[in-house]
Length: 241
Ligand SMILES: [Mn+2]
Image (cartoon, rainbow, N blue to C red; front, side, top):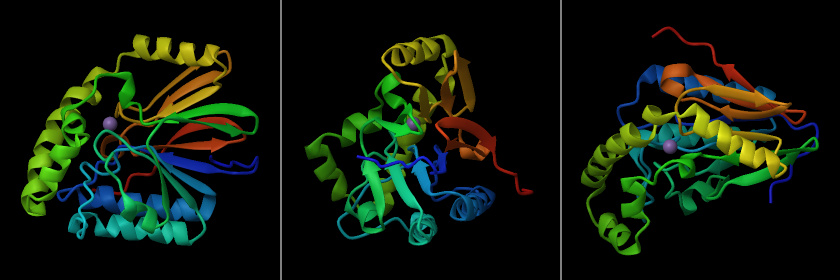
């Protein structure tokens, strides 16, 4: 269970979708964002799909993600508690992520912050399940996948991942559907919902209750801050590309 104290400042980000061909500006801005986190936040919530594909092999980690892991480790070592709600692209986080001090969460969770009940989730369970998840949640296919050489396995998986992102991500932000979902949660005692997955920053407010979608990093540089029981949606300053 997650302990939040009233003075906690929580930064949250989702859908950076880092991979071996990520733009340098996306990665460098993310590192600047983490610097800001170290200066201003007590906790960092990663709301899923930080990696475009992540599979935990027994002995290797992907070279292209090494610097991202290092910066996260540096942030955690500076005293920021990091929680990771897995997305539909990187749900197979394993022991390695725990070894560098990040707490993984595989299910939506309600936190209590300054008296407000805030639901935290990636958001993929709201729309349809995706291919990659179906394939890799199966134990046998996971075992088979793990014996493919990582250079080939990661390339294949990213192809599937790209398809599933097109299918489940930015194409289907149905605002009416989301508002209905939010109202169901509000009537069960939830004050605010924060999620990623839909790739577009979005704030829905009704009667002092809110639904916040964080938006993706490469297009919007958006992130969230939870403070005094309220969520605000922000934009990070763009660096020149
Ligand atoms: Mn997603």
